Image (cartoon, rainbow, N blue to C red; front, side, top):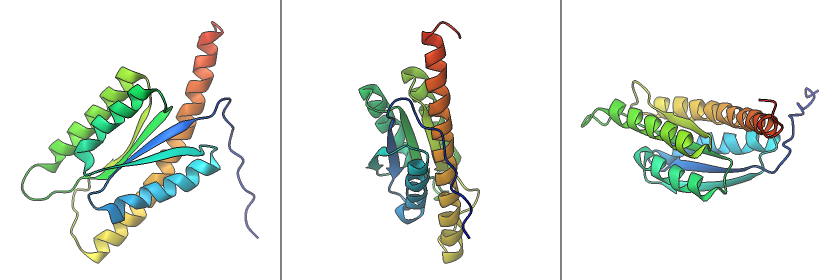
Length: 165
């Protein structure tokens, strides 16, 4: 017998989410999108537009342009930054995360990150399998964070409008 389905809170207003996915290692990163879409629907986030960019470095600009349209109540970023042996991949990951934070603070549109930087990533089937599973977990987690944050912001904005906060 299946456990009873969890009924998640509903939003007062429809929410629209942009999901920006890097295509570098698409077969790994898309697991986050697939899991996100399923969990988002369960959490009443049914309007999700998907955008693809070449790599993680391109995500912040797309996130900023999408946030400035005011069409989206949240933006989710997903990508995989790996050590290619040529440059410090930590620099790319750090730059992307800082830029995503800047976007959300400048636009007041929450931006969520499933941009991951493993310490080691080898192009072996074992690593691909591990990271596919890991990205699926992250997809669920980012959907949960997105829904909970949007619910909290909806509540906060209502309190501010009512002069309570």
